[in-house]
Length: 82
Image (cartoon, rainbow, N blue to C red; front, side, top):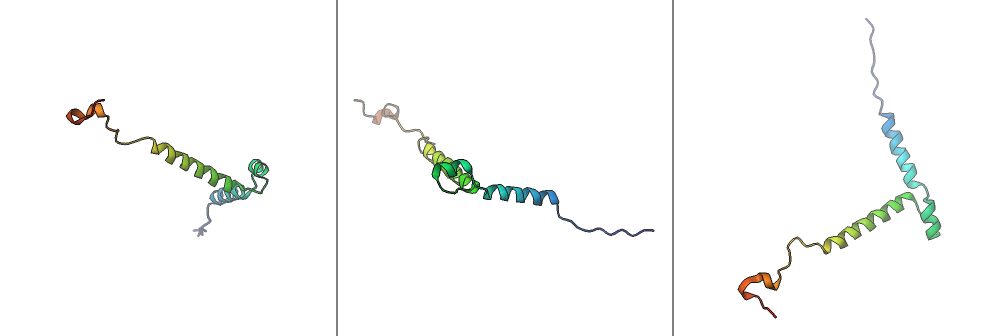
């Protein structure tokens, strides 16, 4: 009977995808680098995009109220009608 030996090997595809993403994030973004006239990486562009999206979402959320404002007509007897 033959004896077999198993050797643990990490998943090569996961490592290659991770390094490909890291390479892309560290690569210079041509569009923003030409607009800003300074070297900008793809990582910085993603961070700027994320910050802009979150800021916009916060600003838009400030205009949407969870509780509707009470209108003077809907307040009943205590309302002041002009």
